[in-house]
Length: 85
Image 1 (cartoon, helix red, strand yellow):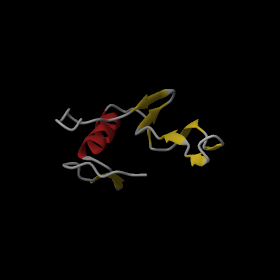
Image 2 (cartoon, rainbow, N blue to C red):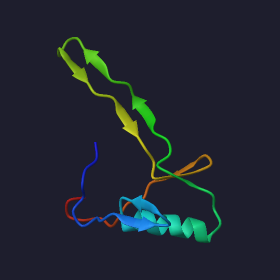
Image 3 (spheres, helix red, strand yellow):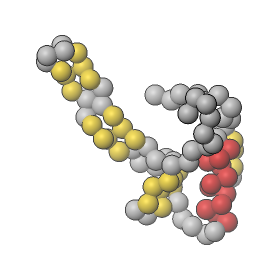
């Protein structure tokens, strides 16, 4: 599920469409520093979905896709804090 955040616009850098200017700037900075990275290349399942017997409903699973992966390090880009933050 992808949510659109007000004030965040997609940006293309080096032929890749990023969800935000900050993500594109991060990719550019990593390139400039000569750091090898991957963009949203892996999704981790934090909790599998399951059927809850006592509530008689399905509980959806929870997953996480980090913005950038550098070896064992994950980078999640976030903008400035806003009143809605």
